[in-house]
Amino acid sequence: MADKDIIVALELATTAVRAIAGQRMADGTMQIKAIVEENASNCIRKGIVDNIDKTTQAISRVLGQVSLQLGQSVRRVYVGLGGQSLHTVVNKIQRPLTEKTQVTNDMIDQMMDTNLGVVYTNSEILEVVPQEYQVGTRTEAEVVGMQVEQLEARFLNVIARNSLQENIEKCVRSAGYEIAELLIAPLTLADTLLNAAEKRSGCALVDLGADTTTVSIYTKNILRKLCVIPLGGNNVTADIANCLSVENDEAEALKLRHGYAWKQFASDEETKTISISHDRSVNEEALSDIIQARYEEILMNVWSQLKSDSDKLVSGIVFTGGASQIRALQNAFQKFSHTNKTIHIAKLPSEISTAPGIQIADNGRMNTLVALLLHGDQNCVNRDKAEETATKEPLPKAEPEPVSTPKQKQTPAQTETPVTEEPRPHKKNWWEKIQEALNQED
Image (cartoon, rainbow, N blue to C red; front, side):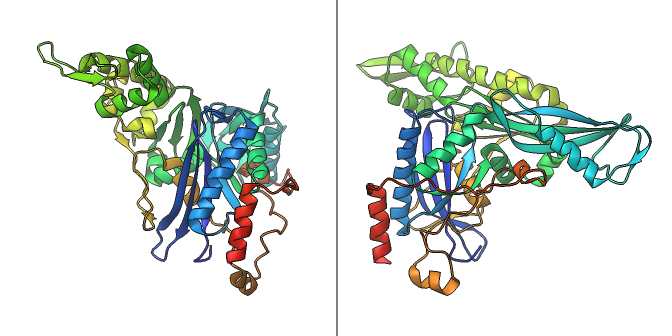
C-alpha cells in the first residue's frame, strides 16, 4: 500500500449505512480522514438488504459525502457481510481407504472440494474454516505425510442466505462503485479486537448491536462457532417506549442516561424520580426493571451459545457493539449466567488516529467499520492526473478489477469470474455531477 493510498470501507449495519476513509501514516497508525453514517432502518432489517433501491440510494449518499470530505472521488470500497442469516455449520468428510495410506495435499484438497460441493437450502457457503482431522481414535491438526487407515476431515462452513451477498453487490455497483473485497464482518472484527493469545487459549467475542447480537467462539486459534441472535439494543429501547408510552428518541435517551443492565436496589433505599414527557415521571427502579428484563433475555441467549464451550474460554469473553456500553453489563452477565469468566468491553484499536476536524466516538458502534478499514490495502479513490501519469495508474473510467471474494472461493477447484460494473443510465445523477466537478478541479 503506497503512502498516499486512501482506504474506504462500507458497513451495512443492522439499521444504518456507514462509510469510513483512512490513510496509513508513517508511524503505522491509520488516520481517519472521513466518516459518514445514515439511518437505514427503512431499507435494512437486521443487517439484510430489505429494499434494494433505497439501500442503493443510501450508499450513494454516504459515499458521496465521503468523497466531498476527502476532496477526492471514491472509486472502490471494502464491504462487510453480516446480518441475521449468518451462521456456521460443522461438516464432516470421510476419505474411504482400503489400506494404510500416506496423506497428501491432493487428498486434503479433494476433501475440501467435496465439502464445498455441499448444498444448503436457500443458503451458500461464504467461507470454510478447516478444523481438525480424525485419524482413527486420534485428533490431529496436521495430517499430511502421516500413514493412516481412516481419515475424517472436519470443516466449519460459514453460510448465509443466497440473497445476502448478491443484494449487497447489486446495491454497491448500482450506486456506481467497485468492490475491492467482500469481508465477513464478524471474522474481520474478531481479527481486529482479539489477539493471538486470546484466540489460542479460548475466547468469545460478543457484538451487541442495535437489532442483532453476534457470537463468535475461538479456541486453539481457530473459529469454532458463529451465530447471530435476533435481539439487540433497539429491543430495550422499544420496551421502554411501549411501557412508558414515550417516543423512541426519548426512550433511547432514558436508556443511555439512566440505564443499567443490572442494578440491585435495597428494600429501604429511596429511589429517585425521573421526569418524562407530558409532565409525567417514572421511578428509577421501575425503569431499571424494564431495561434489566430485556438485557437478561439477550445475555441468557448469549450464554446458551457459550455454555457448552465455557470450560475452553480461558481468556474469557469480550463484549463490543453499541449495546455493550450500558452500565453494569459485566455484573449482569455474571449474575444471569452464574459464571466467573473474565469479561471486558473492547475499545477502538490503538492504531487509530483522526485527522483534524474528524471525531469518532469510542462507544463500540464503529468497531466493525474500523475493522473493515484496517483490513484494506488497496487505494480506493481516483488519484489526481499528475500522479496517475507518474504511476501509470488506470484512469477512473477503466474496467473494474475482479472482486476478491471470501477465501473458499479462491480454492483451486473454483475459478473466479471478473465482475463488471453495470452500465449507468444515460441521464446523469447528482453523484456523477460531483465526480465531474472533482475531476475538473483536479
